[in-house]
Image 1 (cartoon, rainbow, N blue to C red):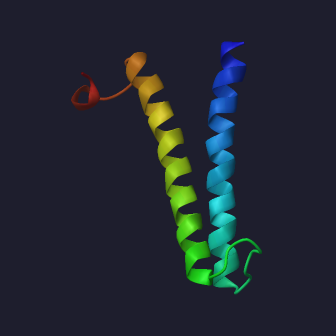
Image 2: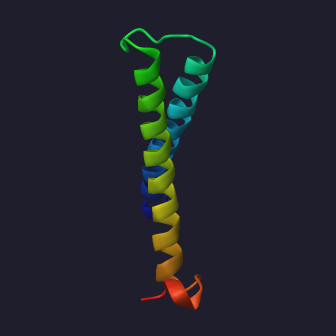
Length: 77
């Protein structure tokens, strides 16, 4: 059960990061999504979603590796 919850915790931010990439790609090709009024706002929202999702997944993996002593000495507490 722990592994399924951990998988869900990683999939949701991963999905948001993927959606952020999609929003940025659509802005590059000039495709405006309906609830967002401006292309620059769409790109900014996509960038925030991408960086936030990536940072969450990276932090989760780093925290897990730190608990099991799989990081370099400079990252250990």
